Amino acid sequence: ILFLIELKKILQKKVPDFVYTRHYASCEILNKLNIHFVVETHTYLKNKTVLNFLKSLHKNKSFKGLVTISKILKNFYVKFKINPNIIKLIIRNNGLNNNGRILCK
Image 1 (cartoon, helix red, strand yellow):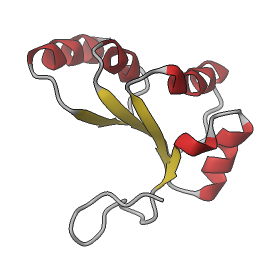
Image 2 (spheres, one colour):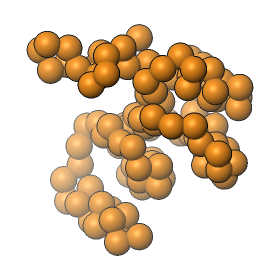
Image 3 (cartoon, one colour):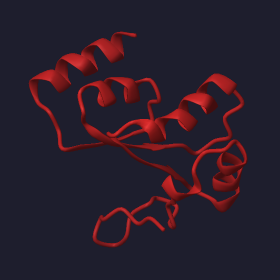
């Protein structure tokens, strides 16, 4: 909770154009502040509340996509009715090419 309070304070002082996050709870703050964001996940989510939250993100104007590291994980999220058009796959283990740019399919 302290992380989210501090995050909100920071984002109100200096508003970024875009945020890449793995912290699901930060998405709500980013959405309320109209900051564009992408959520990354590397795991199967067993918590239905979090899955439903991810499913509902596509309704947010600020949400730009879900990034995962494998086709298996993408299919897992699609099975739970998360829009496949918003799911991007990182195609390298570290997600970066030789120039340090993010690689997504």
